[in-house]
Length: 409
Image (cartoon, rainbow, N blue to C red):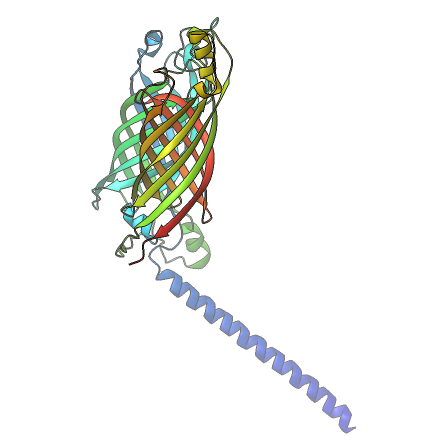
């Protein structure tokens, strides 16, 4: 009988303990949730600050040829749509570049007679660095890089006057200087000037490319990705800021590192249309570089280049009646500048062809490239090697390895 009474009591006691533990757990969870929200609300950069941008372009062509002038008489018009991410200064590189923005964009344009040039569209990534920032108005310098497509190409029979474009897909490059005028917590007015360039880097010929310059105007709409979620599901009285609050932390001293790198790249080229040759030739580059970090943004240095241009074989066989492997090789020396943007770097190498068979290749060359660094030692890189100033020689597609060290004090 005692066991018959004690059993239910023990069972009821266990149930009470379980219910008590559940009650305490729910209270703790509720308290934790409340504490977490109170902590989240104190963050001035809660969520993710982004913007949508709509921009109109118009302007003129900076065309160096003769055959396309009639097709380019009316200039160009274009529309861009961009989605950007705003930085807050949480990382050092963001404060170094004065709290930049970056993102992706879409381009569509009317660049002239569509029966000759087509109606191009484009996709690209962009990076904007503000200058002379003020509460109501500031300026920014922007660079965009991507591809443009839907171009109408040169054809000796059906489109013989198009000596600027010979591939349906070209590299798209845009350099922008804009003023940003704040109109409201969510809207900005954008105005300024920009330069747009199309080229395929001599992968297909002819390839004069197109350069377009002119003004632009647009609207930028700021938003926060969690604004509506917070208002509808968490706290209807709390307004999540649309724009970031910039973190004014001091920039630490730069680490003056040294770097050596070995870079290899390949490419392909064609000869000018006057040669009447449709063949595609192989090119390659092998580059050894040294750089010294002088600031958070910049490194300077120099290096040695080895080049191979297969198209020189045809040129020299026609010119001299015979050709050797060494005739298609060149050696160069260059100075170097590297602009660091987090894991990316923009490279400019002006140089000289110090060893060449004759003057078929100009003495001066340059390299403009974008590098992405991964891991501790690796990188991939795409660049444009030029001659005679900035006339495209070939596109370099490659990568390599690097080793860095810092001087001991």
